[in-house]
Image (cartoon, rainbow, N blue to C red; front, side, top):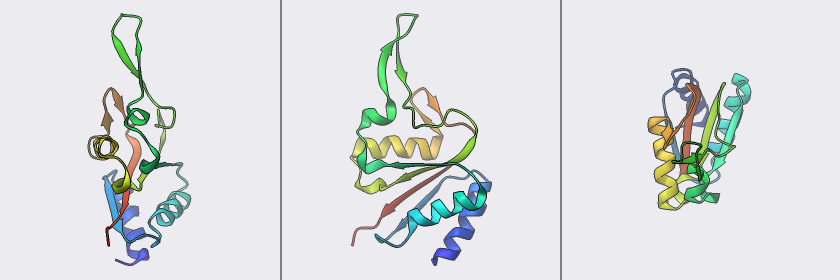
Length: 130
């Protein structure tokens, strides 16, 4: 699929808040297309490089709540409100536990106790193995 076709498809999918997975060769512009789309739609882009994360980075750290039960501190980089595009890049190069967490965010909008706000579109990307 050409970059222009990907950009057109992404516009429709983002508008419909459908999860998207872009898969292609390294250096073919997957990240640039998503960045350009966010700029064109005037939406904030939260670019998360899954390759650089540990599982605890997504889930957050546990802490003791006021009720004496453990809770999870949501990472600051995960959106709390508003709308935008959450872009999880380099997914296939991330550790398996990070991949599982990312897929849960993309497919279910949830990760443990955290729920991605409705206004946020989810896009994941990965390089194919040659």
